[in-house]
Image (cartoon, rainbow, N blue to C red; front, side, top):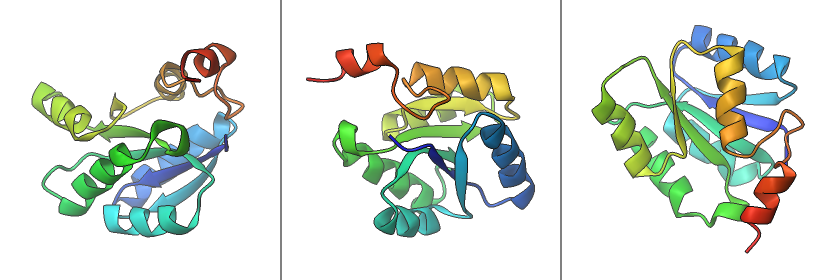
Length: 138
């Protein structure tokens, strides 16, 4: 599995913060400003292991991105972490129902990102943990 994470957010400052956090954990990043741009990147770059995106359900491209990724069989698709600055539980549920694997509250720290990646079985080495490989290997 790759050590690349695709950051999707319309705001440069948010992508910059995300890049700093992720590179401090040993990941390389690729950036997109929209769901549409992210889909274009994912169509040609297959070495991305995680998509970390600003959850905006009113943005059709964002919603399509999450839905499309959710329809790809798990072993060959990147994990999807939706993030947002809302404490609205319905937004979190909507992201998960659309197909996101996890929801991350913004602003996020290095530790919270590390924890979410660990929950998804992605270690700082960018590889699934051995226990995750055994439980998802069927």
